[in-house]
Length: 145
Image 1 (cartoon, rainbow, N blue to C red):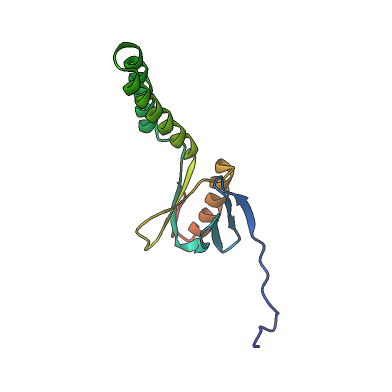
Image 2: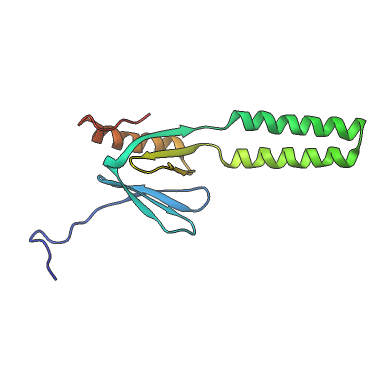
């Protein structure tokens, strides 16, 4: 084995859980994403172009509530079976929209699709990774949004 004279480099990865299982972590040089049942990956801090925190998709919330409202109207005035169908689809859509709230999106240079995760503490995770990006961006390369 050929090791450095200083010995093996040690790094401390600070982790934060994801709502769907797994974790997102970071150290001074990289961000690590380990989904629950998928292979994890490492993103170099300098490759992250920007990050965003999307609180909720309001268009889907409005659509879900409209489906529930239409379903309720149809149940009481027209056809109860069709109305229940609208109610079920509207409630399912509202539930899915709620579970996908506070999506943290990492835009990576030279990657066509951004990395999106749902941390258990999204605002804290966004602030921490944003500080990491800003520290890298002091050289004028990247910035956090």
